[in-house]
Image (cartoon, rainbow, N blue to C red; front, side, top):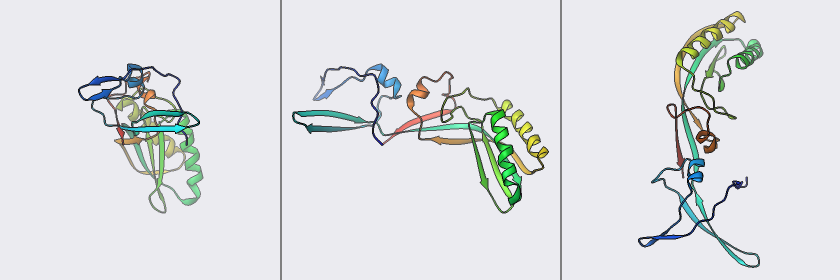
Length: 191
């Protein structure tokens, strides 16, 4: 996959600081990439000759890793092999109504499936408001009723906080988010 260049570029001048040369990163770029003072990075010297000689410095920040603490409604559902398509259909209806940020289905045994409805603020496409625990509890009760009404036996139901790791989020999405998510989200650049 190739790099995509941001639409904004800046002209800067190299300055001296002690025995080193420094370049100032404009505030717009530091906010866009959520940079912090003291953050580690790599600097590569690049050159090419086609036909004139050109030089560049690439500042490599690394991988942007986001960890989100998200309330999750966890259901262990007893289901036979023949009822799995029905369970998937019911889960899809629940997704459309309650809009969880993520749904995970995991087969635990021959007749048991764990369904996790994650009610986080981060989705693959957008940032939502942080949901309160009582909202998740109300949704979990309605989800339990919906699953029971469809003929599924629920062997366990619990609400817990899960740490969800995202590695495909653009830092600009967090910095420009319409909702404050800093209480439930931590991020770092990993080289």
